Length: 207
Length: 207
DNA sequence: CGATTAAAAGAACGAACGTTCATTTAATTA
DNA sequence: TAATTAAATGAACGTTCGTTCTTTTAATCG
Image (tube, rainbow over all chains, first blue to last red; front, side):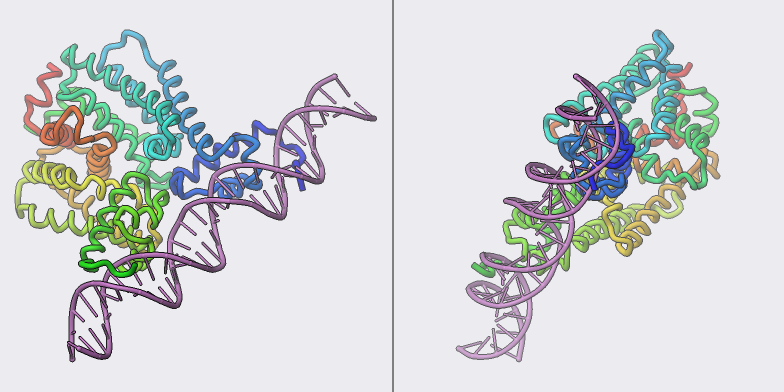
């Protein structure tokens, strides 16, 4: 056999992205073979090279497009000039919501940085730092305005991101809690880490 | 050449553990070859099989002994009957301190669960859940006593562990902050997540 | 001291890896 | 419709993988 009736390049490429995302997230980049990806797509391994020059480029594509998408989505979500407390809430809710449907991509983007060759690593790392900077700058503005109390904004930003990224190590669709419950719980926890939130939420238990 | 003068089995096995721990943490289990580990130890690949039956058993050994060590260390650190707030502080400080010198093992234990074959996975997962249970039970006692305010103790326990595990994705010995600074910052953040801590620390910023 | 055991080397195994190539067939274009 | 391009196949490449085997040498034990 050769070219399959009805097959279109762009569609196959998208299915390759979709399946490799799943597999990389489940087993790790190094543990997934091109033949395995191809089988999941329903194609021979050689056909993958019509769409991506090699395995490394496939990983880089996944990570770059995820980070690009995340930053672009935040850009259109962010409200210019918003007060820090509201901005942090907005970002947390945005992050959780955006993350929810893309747990594989989030997982890969924070776990497979080490699998990237130097050139690709630098590109992805730059985007990752940009996002970290978004979180950090909200924290900084909150600290300056006196509505947050954070000892180290950079570390706090990283801790928040790690906390949220940790969700998909245990989250399962059939689990005890649905996504909106998880959203709420994490929103509260993140606000606490920043030292923000309504006073009674933070303090009544310590009375 | 054959057996090297002065070589003792138990010592070589320990060097194998040490080097494979480093390599697995840096590159991931699947991306590290037995030859690579052997080279780091200063031995041929075949010699590894005098000490471990195969690669999988090596990973399982690392993870099981780490979790065993962690639980044993906490057992001897824990103070029976201690009040929840003090117990949580003790656990957080213990966790950070214990984690600090073992970042590779911590990283592997939470990241390479997926690389374990089912039998080994169950063994490690059981220990992991035991530790999660330690954190959770402190949170529960605190909630009951009214000194913590946590919406979901199980999720909170996991979030705390994820937060702490996230440290070694960025911590470098030559970094801006030393370990004792990081300890302090994370202790504060974890207490906040639990809704504990002195009132003025949590609330003055929101006045 | 001789026999046995432990710990290494080095070669080799089959399997799987990422990737390339020639070929075939479908879709597109002139 | 003929020529070209795009998208697939299946075989094959050299390499590396985890692992096994035989052999050699050091340590240990009777």
